[in-house]
Amino acid sequence: MTSFLPSDPILASAYLAAGLHDGFGSVESHANCVRATAKHSSAPAAFELERRGTEYWVRMLTSDRWLSESIEGDVLEGDPLDELLEEELTELGWRGKVGALKHFRDAQKVYVFEHRVPDASPLPMQETAALFLIAYSKTFHELGDMNSGAGDA
Image (cartoon, rainbow, N blue to C red; front, side, top):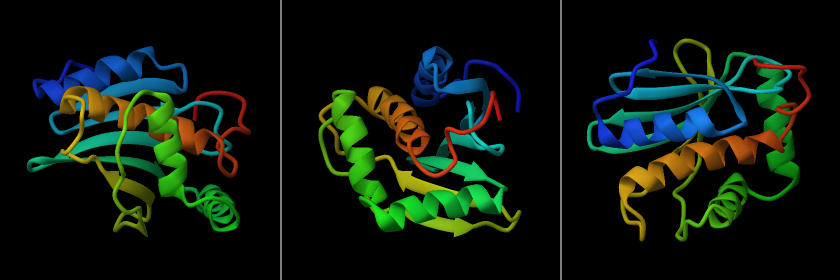
C-alpha cells in the first residue's frame, strides 16, 4: 500500500484520524482500505478499515498464531469482544450496538477479527468509521499479547 489521502471521504477521514492516534505505528492507504500497524504488539499486527461495496469493515489482522490465540484466550475468559468494543466506542462518544464479531483464518493464513461498521448511527458515517478504527485499536490493545512488544509491529 501507499500513503495518500483516499478519494473515498469515509476512508479519508479514517486515514487522517489514524495518523493522529498514538496507538498506531505507520498508516497507509489504498483505494479501498486504510491500514495502520499496531504499536507495542508482541508480533506484527495491523488494523484496517476496508470498503467492500457499500459497506465498511474494521478488522485486526495478524499472521502470528500465538498472538491470535492469546487474544482468543482473553476473549473466552472475559467479556465478549462485542461488549469491549461497545465500551471503547461509548468512551469515544459513539452510541449504538455493534454487529457480531467474525473471527477466521483467511486464504493467506492471516488471523482476522472483524466487525461491519453499522450504517445506522447517530453520527455521520465518516466519523463513525474513523471511531471504529480507533476503538478497535483501543480494544485489542488490552487483549492477549497486543501490548507486550517494544515498538511498532
